Each structure stands twice: as C-alpha cells, then as structure tokens.
Amino acid sequence: MTSKSWDEWVKTIADEYEVNLDPAQRQTRKQKQILEAAIHVFAEKGYSGASTHEIAARAGVAEATIFKHYRTKKGLLLRLVVPAIAKVAAPYIARPVLHLLEQDRPLHEVMQDVIVDRIHLVEDNWKLIKIILVESLFHPELREALQNHVAKNLMAMTGEKLDRLKERGKLRNDLPNYVLLRSAMSMVIGYLLARNVFPEVFARSEEEAEIRMIADVFVRGAGGPKAREEMEGGGE
Amino acid sequence: MTSKSWDEWVKTIADEYEVNLDPAQRQTRKQKQILEAAIHVFAEKGYSGASTHEIAARAGVAEATIFKHYRTKKGLLLRLVVPAIAKVAAPYIARPVLHLLEQDRPLHEVMQDVIVDRIHLVEDNWKLIKIILVESLFHPELREALQNHVAKNLMAMTGEKLDRLKERGKLRNDLPNYVLLRSAMSMVIGYLLARNVFPEVFARSEEEAEIRMIADVFVRGAGGPKAREEMEGGGE
DNA sequence: ATAATGTTAGTGAGTGATCACTCACCAGGG
DNA sequence: CCCTGGTGAGTGATCACTCACTAACATTAT
Image (spheres, rainbow over the protein chains, first blue to last red):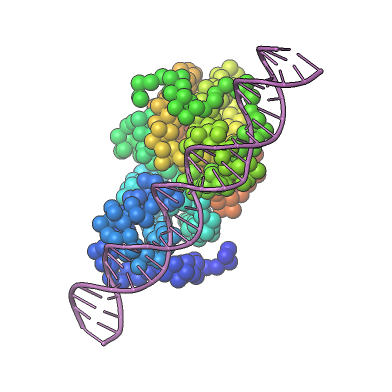
C-alpha cells in the first residue's frame, strides 16, 4: 500500500468500486442529483448515519437507481471522495506555492493572497471536505490515502520552494518544513472550523480582517529576517 | 437554550437521559466495563457506526444490561460525553491560565509548560475527545453546548488574564483575545491531529522539540515586545 | 435465627423497524 | 431487438430496544 504510487492507488480504488474518473464521461441528470443529495446527507449525518433511502428521496430517485450506478453505499461514498482527493492532490496544491515564488512581493502580502485563495477553496467545497476529514477518521484506506499521497505530495511539492524562501531570508531556517506547513495549515483550518462550528465565539471579525491577522501572526512567528523587515517597512 | 446557564444545561441534559453526575455514586464493575467498551467502539466506528451488540460483547455483558442502565444508545453516548464536558469546562480550563499569570517567568517558557500540560490532558483522553469533537459535528445539542458553555467559559475565564498580559507587553495588544486563543489552540490541536492521524508526515520530531517549536512560533507571532526581549535574552 | 419481602443488577429470547441490497421488469433510443 | 437508465416490490440481516424472569443480597417481621 505504502509503496504504491498515487496514480496506482487512484486506479486501484477506482476499479474496486467502479468509480468513474473520466470527467468527460456522461452523467445523467439523475446521477448528478444523486451525488448532490449524497454530499448533503453524508455531510449532515455522517456516512454511517445516512441511509440510502434518504439520499434517494432527496434526489427524487428510486432507491434502486443508486445501486444501479454505484453498486454499494460505500461505492457511492468513494465516488464522491476519491475524485475529490485525486483532484485536490495535484492542481490545487501547486497553485499557491507557485504564487509564492514567482513574485517578489512582501511575504505577508503574498500569504494573505494564499490564505484567501485556500479559504475560498475550502469553503466552496466545505461539505465534501467535511466528509473526507470525518470519514478518514473511520476508514483506514482513506486515512492512508490522505497521508501517503496527499500529505506527502504536498510536502514534496512545497519542499524545494520552502527551502528557497528560507535561503532568501523570507522564512526562518531553524524550523523544518513540515512545522512551517503544519503551522500555517493549522491556523487556517482552525479559523475555518471556528467559523463553521463555533462562529459566535472564535470568528467574530470580517473575513478580510481575520485573514490579515492570521497572515500577520504566521509571518511574525515563522517569517525570516527579510519578511520582518518587509512588514515594518510596509507600515501597517 | 442560549440563555440557559451552564449548570442548568448540565442538569437538563442529565435529567433527560438519566445521566448520573454524582461521582460518589457507586458503579458496578459491569457498568465500568460497558463505559470502557463504549468509549472504545464509539471512538473506533463513530456513534452511528457502533452497535450496542458490539459494545455489549466487548464489555462481556448482555445487551439488555446496557439498556437497563442507560435506557437508550444516545443515553449511553451522553453518559460519556456530558460529564466529560462538564468536568473539562471548569477545572481543566482554569489551571494553565493561573499558571500563566502567577509566575513571572519568560512567556515562551511558561507557554511550553502550558502546552505540555494541555497535550498530555488531550492525549490521556484522546478517544473521548475524538468522540466529543466528531459527534458535535452531527448532534446540534452537543455543538451548542460546546459553543455556548465550554468556549464562552474559556473566553470569559481567560479574558481578564490575557488583558493583563497585554498590558505588561507579554502579548501583542493589537490582536483580539479570541484570535490569540484560537491561534494557540489551533497550533496545539493541529499538532495533536497530525500526531494521531498523519504521524509519518507532520510530526516527526521528539515531542519535546515539537513543543518547543510550537511555543516558539506562537510567542514570536503573538507575543508582545517584552516576550520577544525575553526570548533574545534567554539565548536558546 | 429464620422466614418473608423488597430491591436491584443482570439476562435470554424475543420484536418491529429499518437497513443495504437484489431482481424481474419496463421504457425508449439507436 | 438489444442496451442502457430507471424502477417497485421485495429480501434477509441487523438494528435499537422490550419484557418476563432469575440471582443475590438487604431489610424487616416473626
């Protein structure tokens, strides 16, 4: 398992549960309705708490139709989750890092853009991400996939760029890359969780102000001497 | 709901599901076995995914015994969760903050102690905390309880102390308290999640080193001028 | 001391409801 | 006339939960 490549893993799971990964493949209107209903119900009740009966009713479809297309309840779950993981892994991870390096703007400004970008990505797909995160706690295959492919991919793709930022004094060079990544992700995800779960207590400002503060704390905490100069120079 | 006091809420829920909050009350050996088994199975499969049959089997008890004592499956869940929330809310939150103020040691040192303390608290009760966090996503009463009582309690109890730390220059005074708390909690919980879910990728150093880095990033990011002097003075 | 009685923990054998899933069958388009 | 999308009516398994009952012990009556 661990040694399998990303593409191999996607293919294996896709075959096993007959998940169709070809985006060009046609989808009936009813199939789309089923997927939408499934995202809603899985996110609301969790995989185990959701019934195929309810999903079918919400989709306006006979229950048997679900099994016609996805064979099992788990097949339906994976039809949602695997393509999402596969799509998130490559393109969505790459974009902000390229952003970071290609420009020579002050780190705290670039970080703000990156965080805005990430937050909107997560909020646009909040239900699906909630499903992935929660179910990965209970389905070891999903957890393993997230760890061995998404997380490692992310580390690999960002490693070189983070090293260059360290060299240029934009990031502290006394912290390992995974701590830098974990810190940034923790603060962003912490903000999003707060916003979605405990909005009244832990997320009370406007989004723009929140993002400015997150970026500010991160850059002060993990930025190198160059990044700190930029902050003071920029005023604000 | 929102206007109910903490104690009232605990009592209401406790009555409704006949949760026994008196710690002095006797517990049969079989009752303890049931609770232990329930924690294990709920944490492993989630509330919906767990069956009372499996819990009974693991506890070495007839299934009917569970219903004798806890009436329903949800009663069993709440018998685990409500006392834990009630106990966590008051004493466990207060301790580290008192710690923070009572001493005049450098902030980054005190933060390390606080984080160590918190991490061990969470790891000692990891299964139970996992249950609380996951199920609060699906049971609105639990979510409301966490938000309106635990979170607000935490804000109220720490508010005054955080203000004093700001006055003394140990914390930045341009960040609201909830951002300070959220940042610190995010980084600690992020570390613990990484450690428990994706250990190979995001938590690779010794615990002591990890904690030092977390405290370091936080104090640099959110500490006031005084705290930063302390860090430089301390060498390290 | 012992019999009678009440109380409580615990159980085996169910019960109806709901679960995921199957199958024979239909409708329509190439 | 087959092929695919779609369905109504089931099926056994499993679910949470009930109930009549026993065992053991404490309290009270005799």
